[in-house]
Length: 399
Image (tube, rainbow, N blue to C red; front, side, top):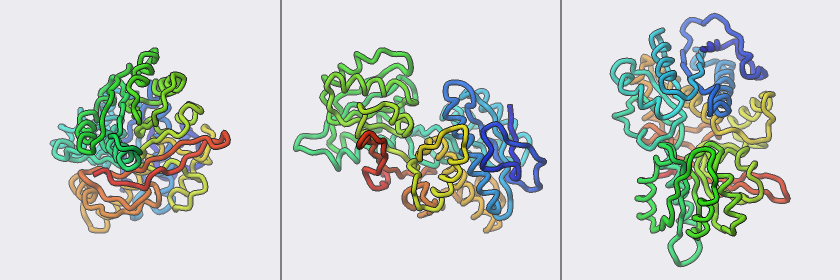
C-alpha cells in the first residue's frame, strides 16, 4: 500500500494513518520512503514514519525548501528486500524522484548497483552496516549517523579513557547471530588491539526465543570489565543482563544505537542501572533549549498514539535528522542554480562542513565518506527510582 502525503495535508496533531490526500503541487520535491509498518520491525517502522511526517510538516509549514514543498510517498515493505526494491522502482518510474529512503542494509545492497548506473537517485537508509562507507559501491547513498563499527569504536574509546587500573581493560562482546550482529566484529578486533584493550569473550546468541542461562554463565566466567551488546532490537540482551546480575556479574553493561532506546533500557529495570549506550542523535528532549530539539519536543507532544516521556525513539529521530540534511543540501543546490540530480546532491552532502543541526546532533558535523561519524555516550540511571538519561561523554568523532 502506498500513502501519498502532500505538503498541505499534514498537521502536527494528526495520528499515524490519519493523513489526508490532496493533489500534488507543481514542482513539489518528491520523496519515496519505505517503512516496515507490519512485520517484526513494525514498532520501529511506525516511529520512523511519524518522524518523517512530523519533519516534513515542519519544513513545509516553514516555507518548504526555497519555496518548494516536500511530497512524500510511504509504503509498507515489511522489511523485505523484494518489496523495497519493487517500491523503489515504481517510484522511480513515475519520474522526478528526488530522494528514496531505505529500510535496512539488505535493501541498499540490492538496489545500489542498478541505482548507480540507471536511476542515480539520492538515498539514505536505517541500516548502518560498516561497508556503507564504500562510496564507490554506494555512490548515491548517505548515512545521517554512525556505522555499526563507528558505534563500537566509540564505546572502545570511552573504555580506553575511563578504565581504572593498571591491567588492560577486558571487554566481552555479545551479539546476535545475524549479519547485523556480526557486522562490526572484524573492525572492533582491530581497534581494540590498537588501543590495548583485551577482548575476553565474543558470545553469539540467537536473535529470538533463546534460554539465556548459558550466555550468562559464560559472562560470569569471562570476568570482563565491560560487556557490549550489539545486534538486537530490544530483545534477548535485557534477559541476559538480568540473569547475569543474578549470577553476580559486576561488569559495566554497554550497547550500540538500537540497544539504546530509552524506552527499552528503562524497561529492563534496576539490573541495568548505569548502562552506557552510544547514540548518533539526541534522544533526551525534555526541557532542552536547542532550537530543533524544542520543535521536535513540541511535535512529540502531539503524537497521541504514544505517551510522551520526554525521550524520543531512535528511528523517529533518525527520520528528523535525514529530513534536515535534505533541507540543507537541497537548499544549497537550489541557491547555486544546480539541477537537483543525484550527482549534485551527493556532492552537496560531501561538501557539508561544520553544519549546525539545531541540536539533533550535539555538535556541528561534517560528512566523512558520506556519513555523519559523530556520537555521544549516554548513561541510563534510576536515582531514587526515577529513570534518567544524561551524557557520559562529550560528543566525539569516531575517527
